[in-house]
Amino acid sequence: MPTTFDLIAVLLVLTAVFGWFNHVIIRLLHTIGLLVMALGASLILIGIEVALPDVALYENLAVMLQRIDFRETVLNGMLAFLLFAGALHVDLAILRKRAWTVGLIATLGVVISTAVVGVGLWWLSSVLGVPIPLPWALVFGALISPTDPVAVLSTVKTIDVPKALEVDMAGESLFNDGVGVVVFTVLLALASGAGGEGGILHVAELFFIEALGGAALGWGTGYLAYRAMRRIDDYPMETLISLALATGTYALAARLHMSGPIAVVVAGILIGNRGPVDAMSDLTQKYVFGFWTLVDEILNSVLFLLIGLEVLVLRFDPSFAGLAAASIPLVLLGRFLAVGIPVLVLQARQEFVRGTIPVLTWGGLRGGISIALALSLSEVAEKPALLAATYAVVVFTIVVQGLSLRAMVERVT
Image (cartoon, rainbow, N blue to C red; front, side, top):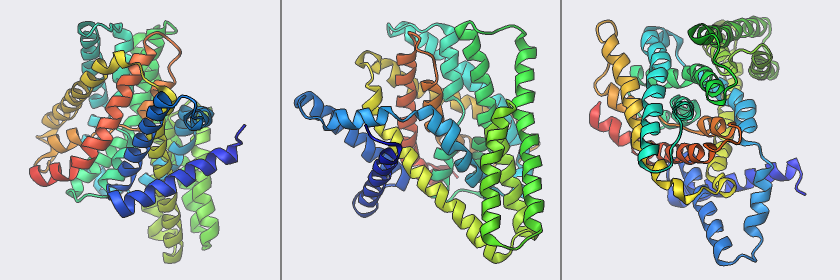
């Protein structure tokens, strides 16, 4: 039986080998290249299993991967570090100017997309002969609507986009997770028959406690860490404080039933903007920001590798292929409306660069968070179809949209 150390070793070795191959030979964007290679390797292993059932290579690797709880690894492991690392580099001054845009797309946009995708999937599933009840279709709309900050940030930093548009993309992806998880939680309770009392008031209570409570918690812990950093000039200690801030804030938010993602984002933005002003020396900035850049790169690489390798574990039913394929344009439509409506509403009070709607639509990448939420569903009859649709959308957005985003930006801006 492989140990935890064995699992970590295998993942890091595969990440390093695939990453080197991609850097030297394939030369795609690093994270996308890892996903493509991992996905290709998974399909090859499945093919070997079909052709040579006596070969144990596939079985051994699949058993090892089954020991990894993808949901737990992403939502209660990597996410705190990845969100904090991304938030450190957000320019607060520009974010304040774009607050209406970021806020409206991250809230109203998620709700619009959830409704459009949910109703659309409900109709499509009936047409395609794999009917999914409306409550479960809306659950899919909720889990696939928030853009994934990991996927978005790892792609945005490799292309040249106007600063205001970059902040819109990064800010929205960092903040819409809290809203998306709240909507997902409420709709999941309704679909499974475990909730529903309280209606709008219940939703509002969840939003205020999780989203706004998480923001307040992140500001409080971030401010305490900032004041602690001001008292010293010691880069190992200040790096340790930033690490404690990310992990401690996320864990405390979970205990208080608040949004951990929003809490660490707010804490990261505060430290990233106030710290360099009067709490960190140049040497400390170099080490703290360098440390988090390295953490971001390593965890990003492992996460995208895991997304590609999940095919070995999930083994989708071919009967869901039509629904999975149809989900891709449906999610794009939902994203277009989720972006377009808020932008049209705000045009009178907010300036937008040319091509904002098409870039935000095509740049709405999904990733590990959507897969983790789909995997968290109980073993209901609808889960296999929803999981197949989720995986198809995630792979399409990362590979196709991610690789063509640069061309889209150059064409429309």
